[in-house]
Image (cartoon, rainbow, N blue to C red; front, top):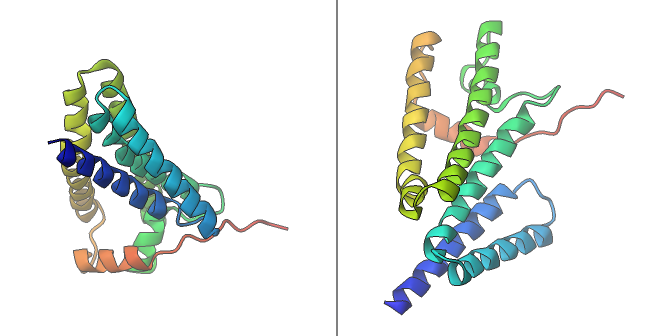
Amino acid sequence: MQWGMGLAGVLVAVQALIVTWVASSPVKSRLLRAASCGAVFLLVLWLWRFTDGGPVVASGVPHAMAYTALLAFFLASLAPRRESIATMLARRSRGYLSPELLRYTRRVTWFWCWFSLGQLASSLLLLVFAPLNVWSLLVNFCNFPLLVATLCGEYVYRQWRHPAQPPERLIDMVRIYRGMRIEPAHEDR
């Protein structure tokens, strides 16, 4: 049993390491990225080993890191003179966007900011005020279904509100996500 718990701890730490590496992808220095991954790996192992409910608490680190990174990613795209993430994806999928669709995509980006913030806040509130198993249920079980339901709900609403001819296909959206690069804001000189 002890061996299995140790292996689970290492797997959670590796998951946190991967989330850190992906979240820090805009950082140009590989040394800095590697150092941050190592720090997170050690933090998760420390939480796992030395806190009450360590295995469960440690499993929340990748969840918190992923939603913090998403929040930062979406918020950064809402800066002045930047194209929001949803606008960038829609432009790559549809080409020209009407002013109405530009407003919609900016609002969708705000929605994803609020969704990420809501995930972080509900996780923190449950961790502080609810039994550990209730918090763990949200972070480890309900998280993915909530994310998928939200993605599907936005897709259905978008198809109804702004019909595309033809509608986006899932494989096209995956191709667009994979080819997406965030570009720095342009400064006026």
